[in-house]
Length: 262
Image 1 (cartoon, rainbow, N blue to C red):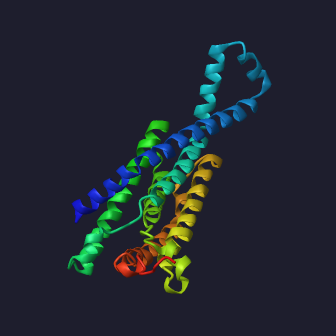
Image 2 (image 1 turned 180 degrees about the horizontal axis):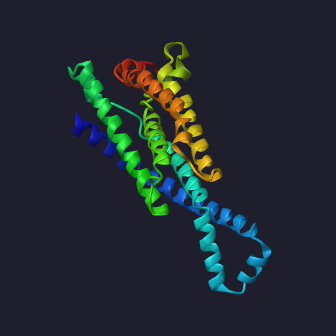
Image 3 (image 1 turned 90 degrees about the horizontal axis):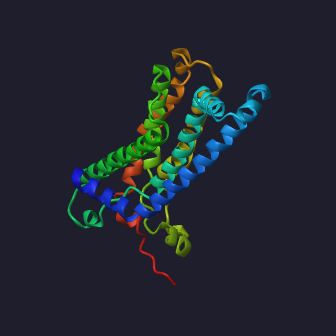
């Protein structure tokens, strides 16, 4: 099941690779534009007595810009991470959780199918983590924060964010069935909750956390303790919704409704 889930994920990635490359390319361009814009704004806020002489002195200008980058490193870090999380979400939407159709026809029991889906979820989370880390290293030289309190919050947020992003099940022919026979389609409450509300909540938590890094001078363990309720909430939501979402994939008839187009 491990190899089956891995090969299926890699096949999905390969089929959508051109689209993913476009996502990454647009992200790099957008991030470069945003970083330049922020740098210009920070430069314009510098005292004119320091800024104006630098126009005629390339070395002084270089030193001034380098100082701005170093003193405002958390601002750039937050911009890169938050934009990247949005791109990761877009990529995850293109890699829905799915079972090979052969497993629906073969006599595999429910536990085997669930095991395959769990492995698929695991490989998908690892793939998104690799992508997140690789792009951050490309832009920032690192992904993980070095300060232990910040690192603890960052790891917990990243872990649950990638899980929530990855829990998007195969929609099957749900959209077509809704048009032809809306009464036949059942609501997948857990899948809908994870796809919309939990993902949005985690994006909000990430935005608040990385924004705090830009606005506070220090982040202590006492500050990290304020994130414990968010951690407990995410643990509860993960425990409550992961298995129900995976189980929505077990019944072929609930994914591919037997409807005929008129």
